[in-house]
Length: 89
Image 1 (cartoon, rainbow, N blue to C red):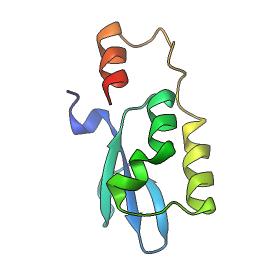
Image 2: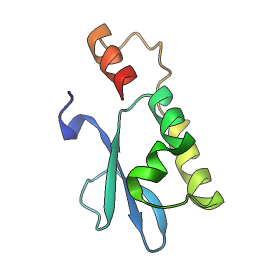
Image 3: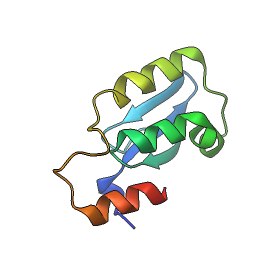
């Protein structure tokens, strides 16, 4: 299990769903690993369920734009243990 600081917080606010890099925004939050594969799985439905919201096209576009900045799953900069934990999410 990774500490919260190693995860990326996504928050639901009245204006939509946003990435919360500070971890301090008001609203219902959920956490994802910093791996593209985890975000791809999250955007298929798990994230919306955790936030208790239906993602709008604007929300999805905003989150996909952030997801594109994340390293691919096969990045060598992370140890194998961390990648295995990412797959468990």
